[in-house]
Length: 88
Image (tube, rainbow, N blue to C red; front, side):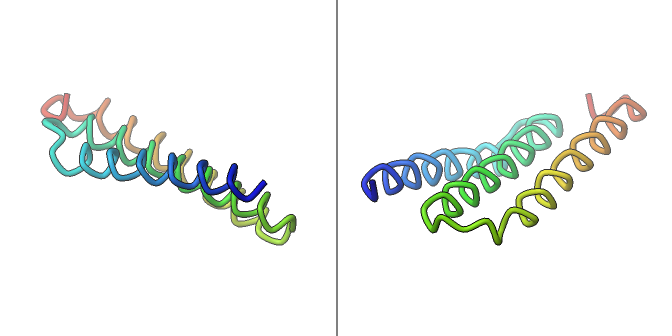
């Protein structure tokens, strides 16, 4: 079972690395916003895998807070881009 968790962590880590590259070299603001949203989602996924590996529920509130922050950030960024024409 530990091999499954290890493979999952490796896949999430590679995805996060590629997302950070996209965040740094993204040609536009929207690309960077989407990359940041994907990065928050990958962090939530990594924390969820860690919770499953340890078989505890003590970090579930952390998942809830990270998910809420990701949602609020996405909505705020979308609202900002909608208001400003030069960011499209």
